[in-house]
Image (tube, rainbow, N blue to C red; front, top):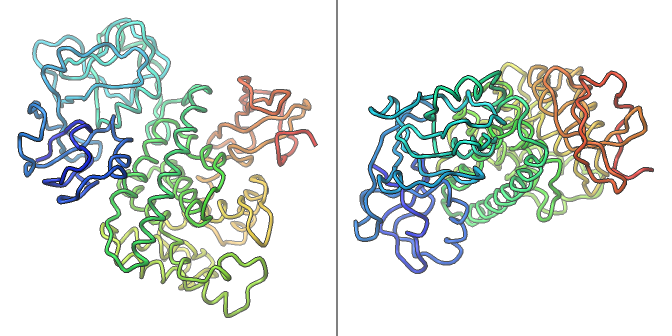
Length: 492
C-alpha cells in the first residue's frame, strides 16, 4: 500500500529506506539510494503530482498519517490517493486555478455534503462558477466567481480525479455544450495566451525526455541494466498534454529546436507526434504509453553505428546502408538490458521502419503484419526527419513534408488510416508552420481541425513577424484562404 508524502520528505544526504514512486507505483528512486542534489533536482517537477512511498518507510520519517481513500483510476483499476482531514477543512480557494489541493476522490457521494458529483470530462472550459466547487470529500477546489480553465482540469487529471462536487445551479451552465474531443480535451482547447504558456512548459518536458533518453542510452551502452521508469513517466506526461489541449504536442514539436544530439531530440519529437495521433485514433491510454515508449526508443540502435555513417554528409555506400538497415535489431539488443520494456514496446521499436508495401526493413513486412501503432510511428518518424536539417540536405517545409507523406501513401508505403489521423492532428499546413494568406497577410498555423486539412486556425503575424492575438478559423472565413506555405515569418 502506498502513501503520498510531500516532496520535502526527501532530503539531501538521506538514505532511502524504501522506493520512492509516482502515483502509479512506478519507482522513481530505488531503496538504499543516498540522495544528492541531482536526485532532488529530478524530483522538483513532481511538487504538484506528489511522491508515494511504501510501508517499509518508518513512521518517524513521514508526516502525520493522512486518511487513506481508495479510488478508481481512469483505466478502471484501483489506486490509492490521500487527503488529510486537517488540510481538507482548511483548504483555501484556488484563485488562479494554478494549484489543486490533494484530492480525496470517491465513487459515491459523502453523506451530508451538498451538491452532485459531476465527471470532470463534462466540465466546460471558460465557464464561470456561481457557487464554490469541491472535491467529492468536500475540499474546496475553486471558489465562486472563478473560471474553469483548461489548466485547472489538467491538474485535476494529474491527481487522478474523476469527479467534482458541484452545486445544482452550476451544473447546467458549466456543462452546457461540453463536447469531449481527442484525449478528453474540451472543444476549443486552451485560450491562445494559455496555449503559448503551455507550449513553453511542454518544451521543458521535451528537454527532460531527451536528457533522460540520453542518460539511459549511455548506461545501456556500458552494459548496465537500467529501469525505464523515468522515460515512462515522461511519455505519460505527453498523454496529459493531449488531454490539456489536443494541439499542444504538435505545437511543441514545431517550436522545438535541436540543441544537442540530433538523435535524442528526434526520438522525442517522434514520440510526441505519435502520442497525439494515437489519441486521435482512440487508442486506450495504456497502449498509447507502450507505443509511445516504442517511438522514443526506436532509433537508439543507431548509436552502435559510427558517427561517420550516422552523420554522413554524403551518399552512403551499399555496405553502409546495410548497417543502417540493421539498426532496429541493434535497438532490440539494447532494450534487453532496459527493465520495464513490454513486448509491445519492443515490437514497435523493431517495426517502425517497415513499410506497408513490404519495401521497409529489417524484415520487409507487409501492412497486415505491421502493428497498427508502428504504422503511426512510421509516419511521425518520417515527418519529423524531413522537417529537420541533416548534414546531407536542408529541412523540408512542413507543408512539403506532408505532401511527400501523401505521395508515399498513394504508393502504398504508409497506412491510409494512420496518415488520415496524422493529417487530422497536423493539417495539410502543419501546426507551427507559416503561411501566406490571400489578403496578403502572413500567419502561423496554431490549430488543426479533423476532417478539414485545408482550413486550420491561424494567428496573424504582427509587423515584427511575431504571431499576434488575432486569430482566424479558416473554416469560417469565406473571404480568406491560404495561398502558399512560406519558410519564415519575414516577408521575402
